[in-house]
Image (cartoon, rainbow, N blue to C red; front, top):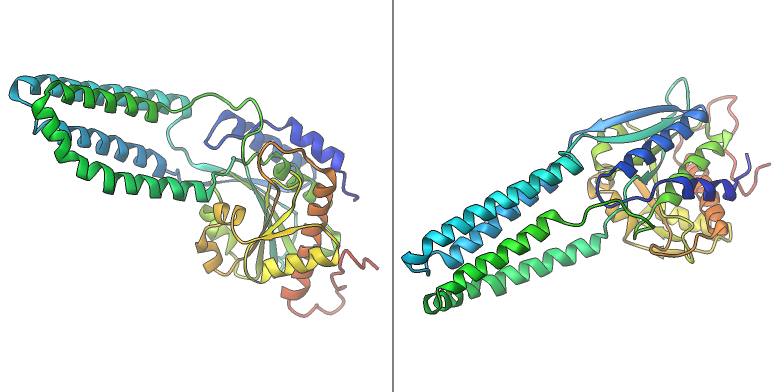
Length: 369
């Protein structure tokens, strides 16, 4: 079937805007993608993986550390007459933080199992080669931004807070009310950091991947029929990255290619992201097809594909657009779709064992005859 960029654009506009965290928009997007894949005749499965408790535990640890810092910096240096006020303020801090955390849990929900949408073509025997086309239901955070935040926080604590403790203690001895002011400031900061911004996104956000979700459906609709007997195809929309799907991606054992879609078509560039043979294969295919592209060695692949997948033997490559408030280029969408098909065909031809007797070889999209 011919690729239809206008239909992809229409579907991308109809999908709800994503957010970096779990939201109602994510659930609606998952339902829409599952419905579209089902209408195309694919077998649709909702695979659940264990709840990601890391963020909730990190918030709890931050709460304990922040209040503990307030106790360490204020209580020992505060005269006995003021310690009762400090104890009262500490208890109010714990109570207020707990109420805000509980309210956030009621609105966002406690960590729940992640639901991944997986579409596969009905088939008999499992082909020896698998091609997984995956994209994110959620706006992925920047890996580099998270790294910089961690570095700045470490430097602040190691070189700012620790040497500051004795100075704060001396200041509180001279001015006992400073202890109350310091803890009150920490309490207000804690309330702001735990509460965080709420509400749904009203427009595109950095990492808006609606084009990736729409292109995933269109690739399933136009998937080359020549791949049916040589390679199994799997179309995945995942909320938390693909690390939690490792057992499914490695079973049964066999050559597996993972193609990640990260906002393709968002102009003005199309990036081929990754290292290793899959990225080199994609770059060679882009050159042969005269697809304008740029090579990038980090970004979408690092955010969504943990190193454990690459160490497990999966060949990974990502096709990424230019994030931000950029216009969608239909020509780039068409180029990304053509490149995915070509990479899949070349991978199947390279990775599959010798063609069984009577089976026709997989042909390139450049030479369909």
